[in-house]
Amino acid sequence: MMSIGALWICFGAVMLLLEFAIPGVFICFFGIGAISTGIICLFFPGITLIWQLVIFAIAGTLYTLAGKKIFHGGVISGKLNTPDANDIVGSTATACESIAPDKDGKVELHGAFWAAASNEEIAPGTRVVIIERKGLILIVKKQ
Image (cartoon, rainbow, N blue to C red):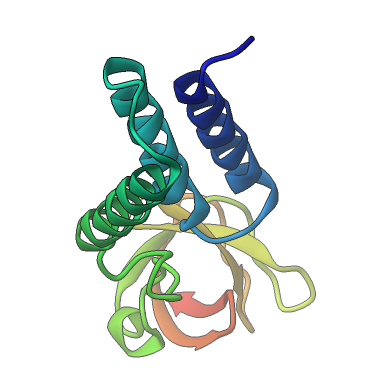
């Protein structure tokens, strides 16, 4: 028969795997809390279920708070790690693909690749200025 500590560890592993299926970074912290509870139960097998649940709740909460501090402003807060439109308008980028009025292309901005549109012909390698952002598409012109 499997020990209660091993069951907690298996439960934590399942929660970590669920993190891949369910968006948001939240379940993994309680998964780590369950694994921590399992490890404690392996060392102290006489712990009652009530204390196991208390340990799990405290560990999961502490891991969540620590994770929130680490990932501050990232996925946990619901914000994407993309610049605000006001932050990138006026920035310069480099065209990675040709851009034409009838054909969108790509530009590189701060190491990230963005879809780009323009009302003029732009060759790859040309420096461009971002004049507007429409969702995930940057409107650019030659520098």
